[in-house]
Length: 166
Image 1 (spheres, rainbow, N blue to C red):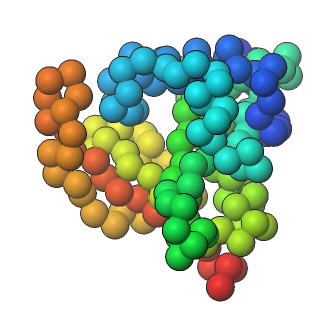
Image 2 (cartoon, helix red, strand yellow; image 1 turned 120 degrees about the vertical axis):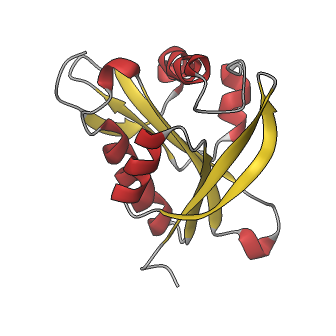
Image 3 (cartoon, rainbow, N blue to C red; image 1 turned 120 degrees about the horizontal axis):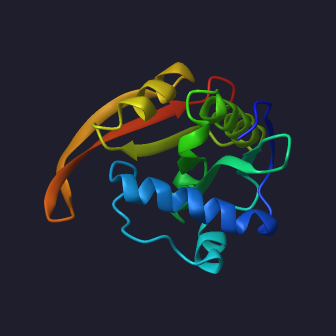
């Protein structure tokens, strides 16, 4: 994959590449409890439309993606979202994840969202380090929260509270 990158809004034309990157994360075993990638319709329907981004190289290939879902339909949680960020294995270590999270943070803050949260397997040290670099903090560990391929897994809860949304 080529060097330069730009962040853009996610559009349906990116679907196949987005789902392929998601499948890479699933196959590696430390990104999600999911065992298969969803259809584009299911993926598209689950993500909030105003806060979805792709990182593209100079040939418009998708290097990674980030998107959010609402954590609840209760009005008290209107400013809280859960996010996902995935980077193609060939594009890791090039600032793709940070660029996507920066765009996501700017987008959510502009919309009045005060908390972005996620759960990360403790073994996914690269993701934990990335999140720490862009201002997320660990708020706890959910021990043995779910089974994954027959094994109990812990999940590290991270969040970023906006300093500009009150």
